[in-house]
Amino acid sequence: MTISNIDFGARPVFLAPMEDVTDIGFRLLCKRFGASMVYTEFVSAEALVRSVKATERKLAISDEERPVGIQIYGRDAEAMVEAAKIVEQAGPDLIDLNFGCPVKKVAGKGAGAGMLQNVPLMLDITRRVVDAVKLPVTAKTRLGWDADHIIIGELAEQLQDCGISALTIHGRTRAQMYTGEARWEPMADVKRNPRIRIPIIGNGDITSAEEAERAFDSYGVDAVMVGRATFGRPWIFKEMRDLLDRRGPDARPLSTDEKIDVLLEQLRINVERIDEYRGILHTRRHLAATPVFKGIPDFRQTRIAMLRAETVSELTDIIEQTRERLHELENGEAGLCQNVVERS
Image (cartoon, rainbow, N blue to C red):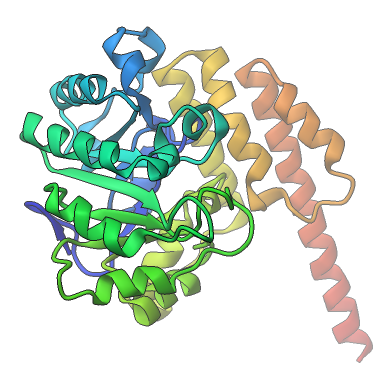
């Protein structure tokens, strides 16, 4: 699959752009484990135009993570065009237009998924951004504003006619936010449309390698984008590539120790690239969500301690103590199994 002149190979899997999640440390790990494309945290066009430092920092990218996209959002056409020009100078491989974020502070102000209520403005912004930059421009949106206004079929054609190089579709309406199940059949309908020439990237409820494979096999999308399932689990891309590439016996899953090492590395990368305080903040969300620690009895207080740790040494000590606890649990289960075998 290709977007403009970028070749992603067969059945690519992308990391979705997510606020406070897809910082550079996390992107580098996802890339290492097989993500075909990564995106920065999404960026406010108006904040970029005003030169807000915290927003400008989100534009920092590394050659190690390429291909990488930067996604912008806004409701003012002039600001979106100016922001796209600023982003182009940061040197990403493509620019993505966010017409899908459902949260109130974005969609409620008419940006993100709010654009689904003002399609003429969405199309005007898209045309103007495409004309203003030399990089490939892509877009991400949802099925429609609500169940009574599923417009993705017509909208996909309109966005393509504006000159975008690919379209990502999240299989929910804005009204659904992140509730209910993502609907993939409307994406399949878009892909089957003979007028659609650009790649269609499917997004929504992809939480395992098996679901990624089903998205390709059952709905015919050109690529799959993974969001929330990556929290604290960058190795999910390895799991997906192992299945999609039919690696078979050579596909050894990561051990618990290796997964904990990855989380510690993420902490180290974040602290080195940002600073200790913010590096820890960027890592907390992943520690809270990672499946590595699920199933540990009475883990609540330890989790709270992880989320309250203020220094790298304190947080590392808690993680290492948790590692030892997991070893004890695994050894206990192994011993129990051995006793059962011996008694039988």
